[in-house]
Length: 159
Image (tube, rainbow, N blue to C red; front, side):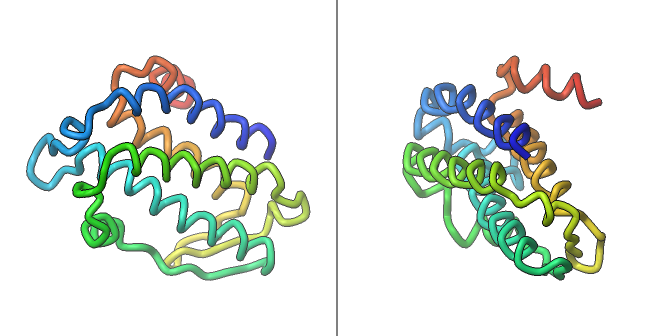
């Protein structure tokens, strides 16, 4: 899992300067009705971090676990990310992911094949959930940072 944790840290290191250059006003713009702004996308990634932290820790403790899905649109709307300061959102995203990289790096080898079900779907191994977390993060970052070459190269390599 060290490789997955390193991927997460490298992605953050490359994305953060670009995210910090986006103005609060620009981060609040929705490109179309029903689409998320940059603030809401990064807010969604904070929610994803929160939900995945639960999966990581609970799945280490118990070899098989059932999780409810989370209603991502409702979470984003209820937390009103678009009304929060952009730099606060970016800082929270950074802090949460630094912690998750630490957690992922230290996932016990014996727990990596523990499984979870999400809303009756699965089983998914803890190892897959950790790797998928990083892929999910990169997918959404690409929407905020379409010019980011390091994200373009990533997707060329996996598809």
